[in-house]
Image (cartoon, rainbow, N blue to C red; front, side, top):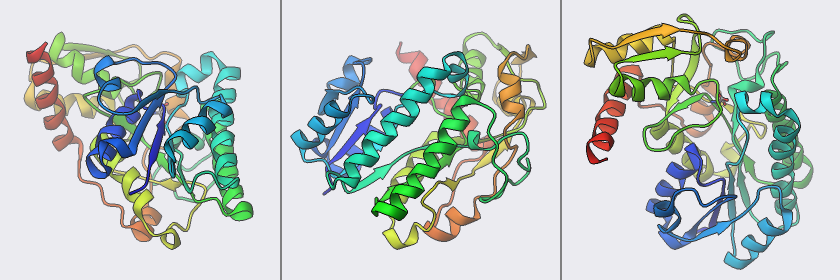
Length: 317
Ligand code: SER
């Protein structure tokens, strides 16, 4: 059994990933860490350490304390927040990655998962069925940091033999932990507001198409790429990954199947420009061929599942 450390475990992906990895590898083999103890119940649910992703010594100490083999580095500033604080976004997104890459280079850990994003693409990238290899001129700080991170991952693999694996996540939709600071977050908030108020004001325009994925699929992809034999991971920058794509109008129609009274209005803000610079759909043939990726959820099945879980949550409140 590998010993696993998750950095940024209290975030939208980290919380779900911690739960699933503990289910598969045993609670004591999965150490959650974050800069803050946000949710007391989560913190008490297994081994937890306060770790600042920018503090090399803290990461190294935690790795040595638990004899960690694998690190999942989930701490990052997302696209919208990064635009408000570019210097900190660059510092956090890049230096946390260097810390973990250097620990692997020094032989202190064996394997790394590092998330990239559709934000590595930019306005000059072909928007439909965006290929794995194409023009990449990201125009957001977040995208620039992810694109640079991808280059460094590949470099550390090629030059130092570091086993680093990565996925370009599309927008991720989940019911249990709120997202923070992303351009795709409307697709989470819309479900909450549909149940709470029956109406939602969207910060993107109605025809803004973006690639998206349900969290269950994203977590499965993350664990599958980490479990795959090293020789199957032929791309050491980051893999395109896809499940569905939709517009605010289409997700509204899906919700209206279950909540016919639900209404939406549109007030695009600064995030519209970010969304407009990203692909509308992704070609993930390489992930499907190399390590057998297959998504399960589409817009309709995700909508049903989201509403079931959110109704339960609200009922128990
Ligand atoms: N969901 C992210 C964001 O919107 C993209 O990786 O920032």
